[in-house]
Length: 348
Image (cartoon, rainbow, N blue to C red; front, top):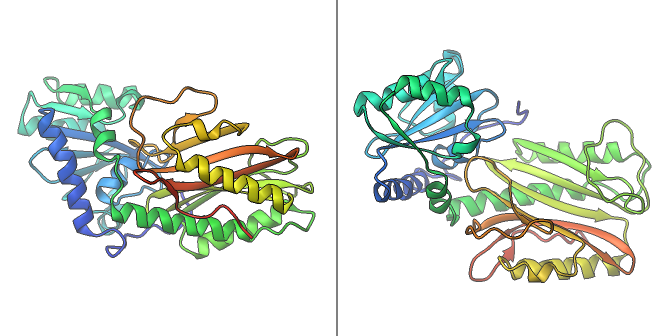
């Protein structure tokens, strides 16, 4: 369950932006002869529905039903008492409340066309129970995987999406800047970082740390009081208005090593989607949103790059050894003709 404030800001996510996204998806649906599209959402997989409607769930789950020629409807497994909140924080024609969201979604589609062709975004990760209810509610519906269609439709970020990611990156950077290199208790520094992010409007922040890079570079969640070494790293995953980014910072390493790592990191990001620039890095990861998961693994140092087109908004994390010093660095980036970082990973 989320803990931060979720509120829709029409100035940050205008109706015109949502209309353009819906039009883009509907054009793809017409090309694929789909009568309707279904997109799943819950608090861990909110990205597809939030991109189309602005809706971000605190908890539970829902299905967005998007007819090819009609308005989107949200079918939620929540009680009626949250209806007005959902209507305030999202842009849908109607909110339907039912414990069996698959059954109701299928019935609504089948009522318009019993043998409709229905695309399901992120089909492979849809629960068996919801799929069975879709079958029960619309036995003649032709259910198809629409993952590639949706990923392609949302691959290029619009101005509103870029602005929200930039704001999320600014929050993450400010939060990480609150962690001092001195002081024995890393937990206090992480608490200060989280508090700073929430004051700036983050709806969620997850912090992971490698407390002593001389011993272990793996990032993990920190509980309670934890002493840190002379050099340690922290990664912040921040959500703002449905937009997720990651940023990483190494604290306590030498200035020369940090500057060299940041320079090489920026150059490697500038070469994406080619992974050639990361040849000198010990490890690296590129994440982004293609369907429902906010930060999906797209390519990394352990897996051959996918042939699928990368979305234009990504978060990149990497580790490089400079003069024997391990340095972890990370930042969101905008890909395209001239790939660039959305926020500087240099904290000096």
